[in-house]
Length: 176
View 1 (tube, helix red, strand yellow):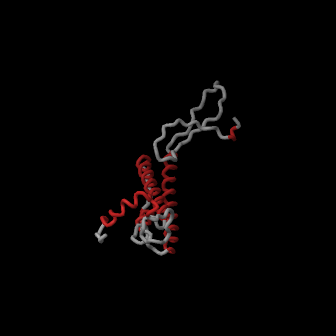
View 2: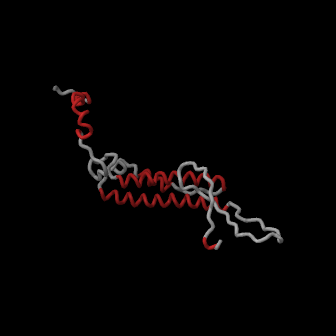
View 3: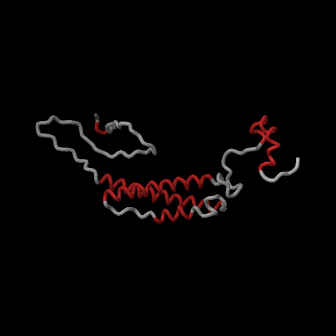
């Protein structure tokens, strides 16, 4: 067999490879850690934290912007957190080709970014909750007593639409 550059060099092997299945080519499943620098799956613990922070920050900024527009309040300044996300896309960090000690610092930095995103989203939700009138109308004097009423805001923790009805339970402290 003569050498043919490119993928076509492997074509003569195809008839022998099919009966042997996937055992012909050695494979590895799992974390590659610090081998094969720049590989997509190297340093997965950093990449997982990075993508999580990227999504948290995007969600927080959207939530904050919408609620700030509705409540006419000033939105949170997330520029420092976005600078952290953008810095971590640097060519030695996100691809996984930095030294191991550098990733310890970057993962700690991502923790600060996640905290800033969660804080901004939480403050926005509190501002929205403050706009909700939770007062209950006073019953007429001749009305029989009823169990206490309560009002609250429910926010979904899932990322897809849900049309279920909510049947809240009463807190055990009410003794009902």
